[in-house]
Image (tube, rainbow, N blue to C red; front, side):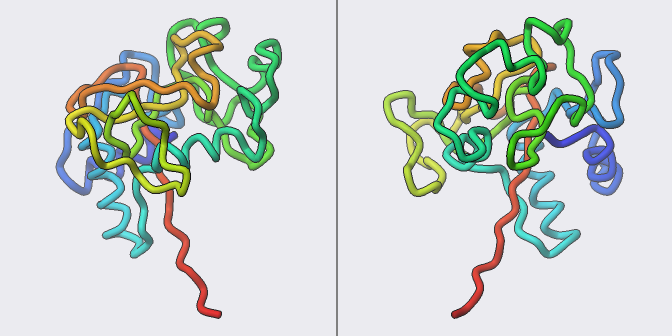
Length: 190
């Protein structure tokens, strides 16, 4: 997930207010109390700064990354007893966030895909449909609400599995919601 340190550079450069950390600390902790619009603006700013196309991941991309090439509930398998090594959740987090990267990464080297903070995705909410199978964003349905993935430090094991979905109004900000960025990789010509 995006961290307070990363978001602080964006906030300073754009004159945005720093989000509250609830007294848990900043630094490498996932940035919290950010709206979907805040997360999208951060991605647009990264594009301006780097020339690379950064954006929020689609719901399908998020799930693909969270599963790390598996078809299991979590990146570490189907047994919840394995989660403590990979995720901050209601059983081990003390109802607060923890610095990114303290747990083991997935087989693909991704940290904190399960737990710690819910993560905004690009997708609009349509609880009656699955994420598009081609990885594209679902941009129909209720776009005033957006998909959240990953669960949080307050979520139980079932709520942080790879296919667990939640949604929230895009203007909502909470102490268990953050975001992760994706970057488009340019296609090479044959």
